[in-house]
Image 1 (cartoon, rainbow, N blue to C red):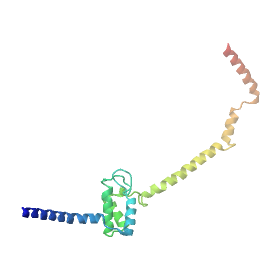
Image 2 (cartoon, one colour):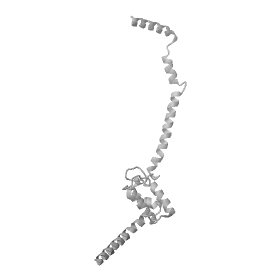
Image 3 (cartoon, rainbow, N blue to C red):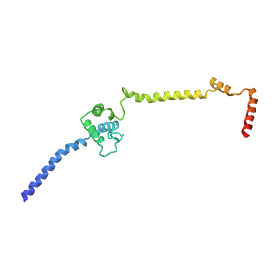
Image 4 (cartoon, rainbow, N blue to C red):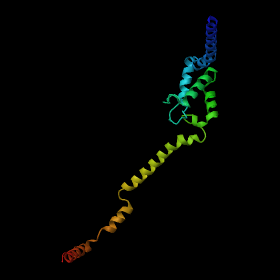
Length: 175
């Protein structure tokens, strides 16, 4: 009986030791000390990359505790920093794997420049058009306005005729 208990204890210790040896490197990688520079780089990269789970947040700000996108991305960023990769190398690795959509802010190059320049240009152009339109409406003494007013004013001789015509139509209306 004692031998049976001793065998079970040995078996349990062996299994526990094997589990520890398997799981220890994984947890060490996940908890590998990045150092102060590595922490700064990790924080920067997590803010620059978008979470792809649909939350419209960065990898750092994703609110989901079991996110299928942010958690693996964070772990991969840590892993790449531990391997000695720099900022640009890590960003290019993620862009190659997941495309430009992983970047929370598009690179300022090529067609992406339209997104940076167009809003400013559009505001300036529309502002100029609105200014010109308002200036045209408020321009005093414009020939078009004075001609319209001149056509609408009755001449002095017809003022009496209009008054007589109104009296006549009112009297017909009352009858």
